[in-house]
Length: 245
Image 1 (cartoon, helix red, strand yellow):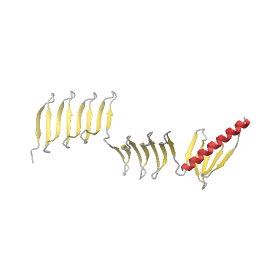
Image 2: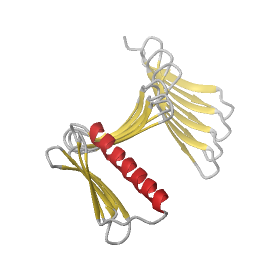
Image 3: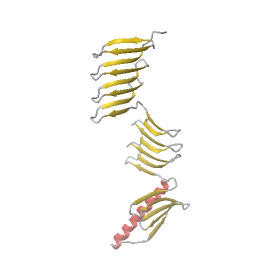
């Protein structure tokens, strides 16, 4: 397909140069109803301001022109694609097809992929983002059963903020590598924590509006159940745990 684009743009450049050369010699405008250029990789046809390109088998591979309403129109046939490169020679955008269907991929200035939007096996859609190490960070798409799914990878997390810019919820990975869900009030102060503790077991903690802990439900170091209530000063005043071996 790159050969098609090379022939296409080469033909356009040659045609433009020819018109400019003749125009400079005669100082007159050149008018033509059609122009057909044949090259090694195919044929380029320019008719009425519309450009069509064909491969050596006579199959159309590209069309660039104007629609009936006056807008521009670009069509690529036979698994055509569009690629852009920066001045370092690194690819920055790919728009085209793969084995599953259409896709759009973007890359950073060094050619490292940053995002993917396209079709996955089974006909569903998928959006993926990547960090500067090429590691996937988010995957949003259609599951095998037809439902939606969202994945956050490499310590990914989800944050929600209110109108005042204060965080109200956090869902992600904690410092110890376990999962956690934290909620805050409208002032941004923690109200509840549900997640994994330092020992690897889960616990639930609640807090009052003066940032004092009010309750704890979790496990002891011996893996027994534990429940503690705190007074308004954040001091424990009642607790119980399962002593059964």
